[in-house]
Each structure stands twice: as structure tokens, then as C-alpha cells.
Amino acid sequence: MPMKLAYWDLRGLAHPIRYLLEYTGEPYEEKFYSCGEAPDYDRSCWLNEKFKLGMDFPNLPYLFDGDTKVSQSSAILRYIARKHNMCGETVEEKTRVDMLENQIMDFRMGFAMLCYFNYDEKKDEYLKTLPASLKQFSDFLGCRKWFAGDKITYVDFMMYEALDQHREFEPSCLDNFKNLKDFMARFEALEKISAYVNSSRFRKLPIFAKMAKWGNKP
Image 1 (cartoon, rainbow, N blue to C red):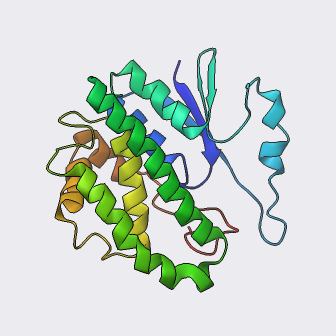
Image 2: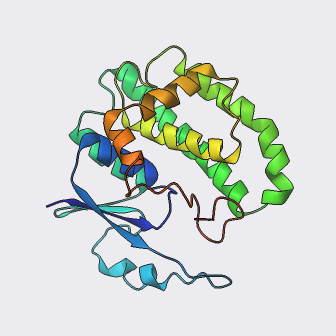
């Protein structure tokens, strides 16, 4: 039985999960929820069944794998990664994975706050501080092939998506960070990732939901 991944009909928090499912070859199917148009942005398609699915912590995205029901995007990524030994092998690698996961989530949250709220007022300020954030990631990667070391882990999928969203936002943002650009190219060259991106199942847009100020257009 294939896994079932459910989320809104956008990239958001689910895209790293989709990449990881594709890379690992896990059979899966998707369920998409759609919110209504402005001004109400009706979410009843999700809210009407949110507490009827038997989850401990009902939320989107969720992943059902047989009797196992997982919510929270990072927990879903780790669940899949553990099945494929993609959480780091040594203590050092696992520590790097743990730190980077949380740093990416902070990075993504800051970007989401900008795009959903004070976009016009804060965009210029965000662009001024973005290089400093990217430099931290660049320094952390260093000359490694992947962020934990020689082997790819689930945080590489998170990092790729976060950086790719920022390339959509500011196409030149990685120009001064060669190792990050090389990382992106390396990820995109993975056979199963390339096949997915070039398939009809891939969703490039929207990145965020309809109420966002940026990244909300299909």
C-alpha cells in the first residue's frame, strides 16, 4: 500500500517531503486541500475532517503509512529518512543534521513571515540581511559534498527547497556563494530528482497560500 501525503495545493512545507519520497523511491499518493478565495480564504475542506482522521496532533502536512500516522513536517522527513538511513551515521554527522534542521526552520519561518505579512515594508530590509544568513549556510557546508558529509541526508532536501524558494524571490542571491550553487546543481542532477522535476506531477508554483503577499500565484 502506498504512503499518503496530504497538504495544501502548494509547495510550502511539503516540498522537501515530496523530494525525499521521490529520491527514496517510496510509493506514495497525494491528497491536496484547496483554500477558498479572498477575503475569507475558506479552509473548510480541511477543517471539516481535521479531527476525524485519527491523528494525535492533526495538522498539515500529514503522512499515512499503513497504520502509522505522522504529522509535523520535520517528523515526517525523519520518519522517511530513518527507513533509508538518511539521518547521519556518526555522532558528528547526526549533530550537524540536528543543528541544520533547526536553523533551516528558523530561516524558512523568517521568510514566510515576510511573505505573509509586512512584505512591502520589510522586503528591502530582508534583502540586506539575506547575504549574512546565506554566508552561515555556505560556511557550514564548506567543501563538503552534502551538509552532513559525504552522504546525503534529509536536511539536504530541506536546504535545497529553502534556497530554491529564495532563488525565486531573488534570482541572484546565491551568486556570491559558489559552494551553495554547486550544492544546488548537485541536488538537481540526482536522477530521481531530475525525473520528478521534469514530470507532470511537479508543482513549481505557488510556493505559499493565497493570503500571502508573495509566492501566492500559481
